[in-house]
Structures are given as structure tokens and as C-alpha cells.
Length: 78
Image (tube, rainbow, N blue to C red; front, side):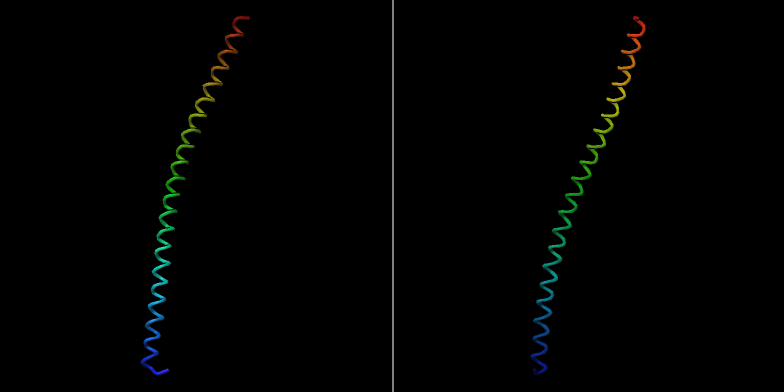
């Protein structure tokens, strides 16, 4: 292959490789964006779960306090 054609082939190959790299970079950016979105959703769910857990702990404490109060009240009546 004459040297001048070799340069053209290399340029075409370089262009194809550059196009492929650009395509993959765009795909990576898209996936990265989707992962960030999912991470935000997960963080919101974790906060909601934490809040619900705190509420559940509060309700359990109130339930046990009320139960103890009822038991103590019944004992005083007897």
C-alpha cells in the first residue's frame, strides 16, 4: 500500500475509533445520570424509612407506657 493511502486509512480508522469513543462516552454519561437519579430515589426512601422507624419506636414506647399505666391502674383497684 502506498504511503499516502496508508495515511488515509489511518485517518479513517482514527475517525471511526473517535466516533466509537464518543458514542460510548455519551452512553456512559446517560448511565451515570440514571444512576444519580436512582441514588436520589434511594436516599429519599432511606430518609422516609428512618422517619417511619423513629415514629414506630415512639409508638412502641407510648404503647408500653400506656400498658404499664393500665396494669398499674388495675392493680390499685384490686
